[in-house]
Image 1 (tube, rainbow, N blue to C red):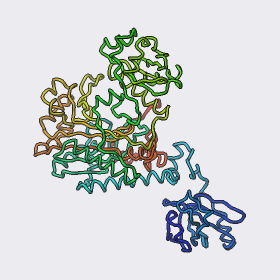
Image 2: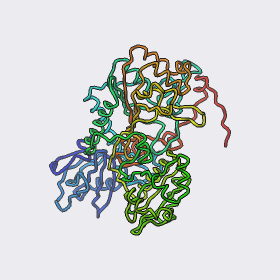
Image 3: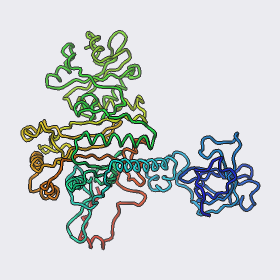
Image 4: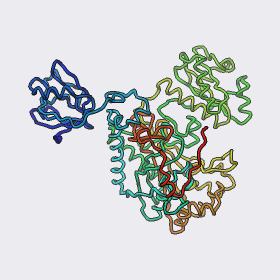
Length: 589
């Protein structure tokens, strides 16, 4: 029986219509000889009734149905009485009075329940991913991902971008993470790499005259997995010629507004606010600040000389900084023990401790309050603090003070339930340092990648003062996550050589690794800029999840394994011989 309708489309207007439905038995129940089943497909759920009008053989087969049997049902649409309408179901106005039933396939005992939220552990869910994906939540997540991808393409097409695929077997180039290598059978001893991004090829497309390129690209990075990181991931990648970063921002902001309106009916306010890297760190302790948390840092250094607290004075004398953060109304709920738990979070990020005090109607109390009570009014005025507020301090060098207090801020948001998952706060973080000092190797590294343009005012002194150089770099952040990263690219071969020199990348090696890109720049390369954002991460946030596994059809566990197909796996010796590869035995640890 071939279906003539889906399980999500029928309503009262179809009353009396004969239909055939195909799907899975979502639930079945027997009410005194009358069998009810909820039949499910990806479009929805419809109730089917086998009542006393059915032949005995049909009723007997209906009673034998178990959860997740795959069946075909023929019957007539019957409008329910008003008193029996199920308002929780899209098809709740009707039911199907069955006349025929075909069991297409049966189902063994389920390893976990599909109806409702699964309590199965992650390994079990991924091993039986085909069952996990049948759950309503996962069906909705994958459907949203599809809609987002469609909206992305729709928006780029409206702006006359070309969708151009780039290779997935490329030359290994240093891009910040380990490459996945693929042996080249026809060239023994040589290897392809899977792309970490289409970076070099999209720049070459700009040299090729395709001034508006985009791609929903599959990328691969051999790095440790976490909730928002997988080996295989999908990014929306685009590049434009003859533009500035403002043009890139305009495209992205319009695209995000289009995606959210079309898929979630959410209106995003644009343009997005812009913060410099220094402002983001100084005010929020993070270069990907969560702007849903209404707690900014204050510079407390001006009041330190007025109090007799030697620890803060010593830090300032050594060139450090003192940051203060007010947690509104939190003082009554934070005992010394609970503050100590926050202190452990701060220590994880390099802080030596976490100073604190509470605001009372009479002044200050607890922690380091005794040192600042003589100037309590000044403290409250500077910080805008009121009775029952908790004040927390980050102290040390600027980076440590900001980062450690930023970690505490993020923890407080979770502990105090300060944010809503569906409140989306986008912002641009701009003006990142172009280089960062590698203390272990005593050298300068690119903060983003080696193809990002220094801002004009720093080009002349780039070699003399690398630490001062600000790049034309930008990130798009939302709700505490880095969603996108991009830059104005270097298109001048001489500037590219200078950047290579600063990061200690020899000219010979640069030619070996990137020669095809560098050579292309000698043939009239246009100024260009671009950006890439994580499609998986965007959908994860739109679904209110904290793990990419919830929005990727076939993800991997944190060990990098996939319980479904048991990859990675051993291969036959014959395959290795053909590739001229020998394995070195790994000793058990």
